[in-house]
Structures are given as C-alpha cells and as structure tokens.
Image (tube, rainbow, N blue to C red; front, side, top):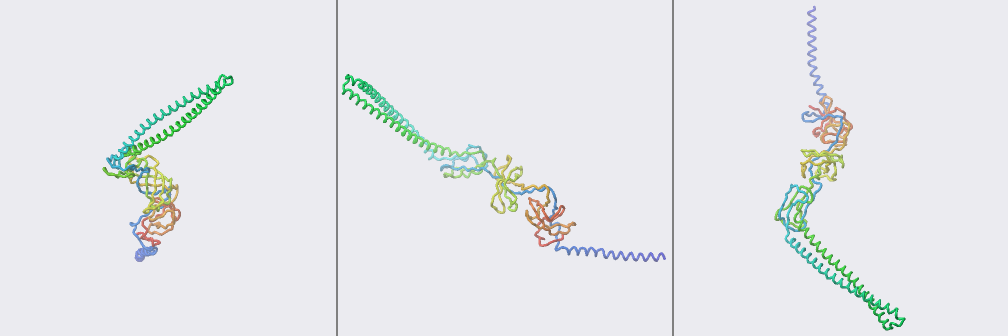
Length: 416
C-alpha cells in the first residue's frame, strides 16, 4: 500500500515541473513583448553618451581661442621723398628707443640744408652790419640833441641876465630882444632834435624787429630742413618689437609712406573669439585666464565687439600681471572667462545643442537604464561643458547627452 502511494506522488511532481518549465519562458516572452509595447524604437547603448545629474559648486565659464595683439602700435613713416639706403633691422627684431631702423637718403634735401645755412649766415652778417650803422646814427643824433641842449641853456642864461638888467638901463632893448629870440630859437631846435631822436629810436626798434623776424624765419627753415635730414635716419620711438618693414634697399619711397610697424611688447592684449551662443553672459570687467600653452596669465574683459563675424564675437582681454617671456604678438592662445560662481546647485554635463537659460527637453533614463523618456527641463547658466538644472531633474538622474537627432521624434525609446 505504501509503495503505491509513493508512485502516485512522483507522477504529480513531474506534472508540476513540466507546467513550470512551460510557463517560465512564456513569462519572459510576455514581459519582453510588454516592454516592446512601451517604446517606439530601440538604440544601441554603445552609440550614446550618458551623464548623471549632480549637486555641487557650479562655476560658469566661457572659452574662446584667439591671438595676442599689441595694444600700442606705431607706424613710422617717411617725412620726405627719399631712397632706402640700408635696412638695419628686420621684422621680429627687438629695438630700444632711439635705435636706428632704416637709413634713407635725399641729395636734394642735403643741398637745401647747405643753402639754408648759407642764407642764415649771410643774414646774420647783414644784421650785424646794419646794427653797427644804426648805432652810429643813433649816437650822432644823441650828440646833436646834447649840443642843442647846451646852446639852449646858454641862451637861457643870457636872456635871464638881460631880463634882470633891462630895467636898470644897463642893457639896451635891442640886446634884450636879441637874447629873447635866441632863447626861443634854441628851444625850438632842442624840441625838434629830441623828437627826431624819439623817431629814430622807434625806427631802430622797428628795423630790429623786422630783421629779427627774417632771421628767425631763416632759422626755422634751417631747423625744419635739418630735422628732415635727421629724419632720414629712421629711429625707434619706443622700446618695442618690429612687426613689419615693407621696404627693400634701393627702393624709392614717397612722403608719408610706411617704413616700419612697431609694437610695444609689454603692452599686449588677447583677442578671443567667443561663439555667439555663449556671449550672452560675458560682460566687461569679468575675470579671465589666458593660456599660452606654456603659461597661464590672469586678465579681465576690457571690450566686447558689438559685431558677429563668422558666428563669433571678439572679446578683448587686458592682462593684470606681467607677461611671460613667451608672450609675443600673433601668438595663438586659449582663454577662459569666468561668468559667475554658484555655491550649491544642480548641474549636468552639457548635452549637445543645449541652450543656456531656456526650456529644453532631455531624455532621462529609467532606474534600470533600459528605457529613455523625454522630460521637460528648465536650465539656467551654461558653462563650456556643464549646464545648470533649475527644474525637471533630480540628483542621481541620468540623461542622454549625445546627438539627439536620431531619436528626437520619439517620446521614449529602448536602450539595448
């Protein structure tokens, strides 16, 4: 009896095992079919890039590339028509103020300088001779005035004496009248000679002024000609580096032609080209770091160009510290501008095509990371490779940050 019961239990156990083996794969098939029904399409995990939402200090920076350019540039130009005799320095040479850069020549100008010297010497000799002659005439007139004054004083004494004696009868009326006429005569002569002396003084002063003006004019001509001759030796106007010397020896150049371009090496700025989609947060006065590949230099934003060229905006960076030895004009550099620093906020690696301060949609992964679903997200400040999350995501959420153009038409998709 016990043996019969044991055989029946074994048959029942086999039945349940067969049923379980049939239902187990069916369960997974149903589950898989249900999973397929929840999505519109599927994509390979290896073809996508993911990022996790984090909370921490968030520094917003904008990057750009550019070159170092001189802030103080001077062009040296020719003051007269001339010929290039010798190029003393070439582009790239470092010069000090006063160093010779180019030697020019102009034979006609040298002849004009000699003639100006001769003209000035002749005028100086003529002025000296005229001065001696005028001094002689002046002294003669002074002598005439002095003699006339003596004659007048003598006639005045005689008249006064006759005037005292006319009443006593010691002097006749005729003698008295003669002395009165003589006094009046010499008085008029003295007045006339003094007036002549005064006119001579004014005349001498006018002649001196006229001759002095002619001499000064000749001196100015000589100085200008001498300066033009000196300018044929073109010298550096400041401690600088020579950027260009667009000349050849023997070349004839016209007045005003460019001779050399100088740049003050210690006065360089960085011209960065920032993509226009990132320029919105950049403002004058923000700190920046310029990377020369060998050194990093601190600076600030000093100017933002209002124009957009080829999708970029030029931003000028003025340095706040001494430049390293490798800093030279036209050196390629990279720059990073710090926009803002937020102590505690959500952020994630920046998805492709994500715009700062906008309402966007990202694909958030499910907990098992097998499903990606579109969610609306409000983003804030964007950095070079990160973006701030204001609404729509939580710490630990993972999103797709690779190119979304393949699946942007789907609300959700599977990840294989």
